[in-house]
Amino acid sequence: MTLLAEIVLIVFAGIAVATCVALLPAPLPLRRRIPVAPGSPRPHQLVALERLVTTAGPSAVSVHAYLRPLLTQIVSHRLAARGQTLERMPEAVGREVLGDRLWDIVRPGRPFPEDRHAPGVQPQELGAMLEAIRRL
Amino acid sequence: MKGSLSPRTPGVLALAGAGLIAALATGRPELALIAAPFLVFGGAGLVLAREPQVTAAVEPQRLRLLEGEGLTCAVRVRNDGPEPVEVEVAPVRTRNLAVAPAGTVSVRVGARSETEIEFSLRPRRWGAHGIGPVAVRARDVLGVTTWEGRRGGRLDLRAFPREDRLRELVAPLRTQPFLGTHVARARADGIEFADIRPFQVGDQVRQVNWRATARRGSLQVNQRHPEHSSDVVLLIDTFEEARDQASGTLDSAVRTAASLARAHLGRRDRVGVVDFGGTLHWLEPAFGTTQLYRIVDALLSSDIAFSYAWRNVDSLPQRVLPPGALILAITPLLDERSIALVSQLRMRGCDLSVVEVSPLDHVSPGPTAADGVAYQLWELQREALRARLRSLGIAVAVWEPGGALGPGLEEVNAFRRSAQPALRA
Image (cartoon, one colour):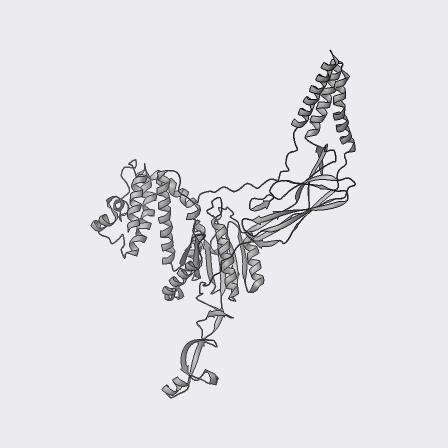
C-alpha cells in the first residue's frame, strides 16, 4: 500500500470517528414531572339521564318506573307557572296542551304496563316531547 | 447529588475501545493513534471528576398574588467548589403555573461564585402552587460526569382568586345587635325613620316630632331603625363539580365566595365559611380584614373530595350556623346531598339563598342523538329543581361563569322581597 493510500485511509478513519462523535447522544433535558391533569368526568346527573334515555327506548317498564316520574315533575312545574295542575287537568285539555304521547305517559293514574317487553320511548320521540314541554 | 456518566462518555470510551481493537486486529498503529485521544479524554475525565458543591435557592418576589398575575422568581445558583461548573436548571413545572422560559436554562458558574436566573411565573388558577425544589444538573469541566439532584426548599405560592366588585348584596332578614350597615327591623337609635309614638318618660327632646305634636295635641316622638350588622355563612358545595379543560364550577364558586366574603366584611358583617363536601371544613363567623385572609386561605384548600358518606344538616356543628345568620349556598346543584342540605336548612327556618354556579357551560352534549336528548332533559330537570327550591322559599340565582354576579343577587333580593312575609314566618 502506498503512502498516499495510507494517508487517505487515515483521513477517512478520522472523518468516520468525528462523525461518530457528533452522533453521540446529547444529554437529555432535565425533566420535572408535571402532575397529570384531572379528567373531566361528566356529572352524575347527566350520565344517569343518558342511561335513562337509552334504556327507555326498548323498555316500557323503564319509561313507567323512571322516565315518567321525571317527566311528571318537569311538566308539573311548567303547568304550575300557567296555573294548571296535571291532577285537575281534563284529558281533552291535557292531550291538546301536551300532545297525545306525552299525556299518555304523565297522565295521573297511568297503570303499570301490561306487556313488560313492550317498546318504550325512542330518543327522537322523547326529543319531540321535550320540545312540547318547552313550548308550555 | 447523584453522579452518573454523561450520555456521551460511554460512546467516547466505545470509540476508543473499537480503535484499539481494530489496531490490534489489523496490526496498524495508526488506528491506535486515532483512538488514543478518546481514551485519554475519557480516562482523565473519570479520574478528575469531583462532585460539584452546587446549591440553589428559589427566591420569588412575593408569595401571595392574584390568579393571572405575573411574578418574577429568581433562582440563585451558588458554586462553592474550586472549579467552574456547567449547571442546568429546570424551572418548576406544575399544571396551573405558567413558567417562562419553560425549558432548561444552562449557565456556567465560576469557582466560588454565584449567579442568578430569573423565571417569570403566572398562576392560571387560584390555589397553592409549590415552587421548588429546583432540579439542578452539574457537569465537570470535561463533561464526562454529571450530577443531578434537587436543591432548595419548597415554597408555596398562594394565588388568590380574582374577586368581582359587588354593588348589591343579599339583604339579610335578621340582623345582629352590632353596629353595621343593614337597617334592622328593631326600633332604636338610627337614621331610617320607622314610626311615631307618644312621648314616654326617658325619651330625649331631640326625638320629639314637633309637627306631629302640633297636629295631635300631645308630645310625639320619632322612632327609628338602627343600623346593625348580620351574620353571613358561605356554604360551598364541594361534593361534585362540572369541569372542562380550562375551568370548572369549583373555580367559579371559590371566586364567588371570595367576592361575597370581601363585600360582606366590608359592610361590617360577620362572615364564616363552610366547605360542605366529601370532607367538611368550616370557619366560624368573625369580623374584619383578618377574617378575610383566613377565609381566602381556607378557600384555597377547597377541593372536590369524592365520598359516598351521606351528610346532612346534622353533620354541621351548631356554632357554624349562628341563629339568624344569612346562609348563602354556592353550589352547582349536582349532588343530592347538597340539594337535600339546602332543603333541610330552609325547613329548619334558616334564612337561605342559593347561588347556583351553572355547570351547563362546562359540559357539552354527548356525541349521539340520544345524548343530545338527555342533555335537554337535564336542562329541564334542573329548571324543575330550581322551581322546587323556590317553592320552599329559597331564592335561587343562576350564575353563568364569566357573567356578572350582581344581576343574580338582585334577582335573589327581588324574590326575597316578594316572599318576605312567608320567609319571616
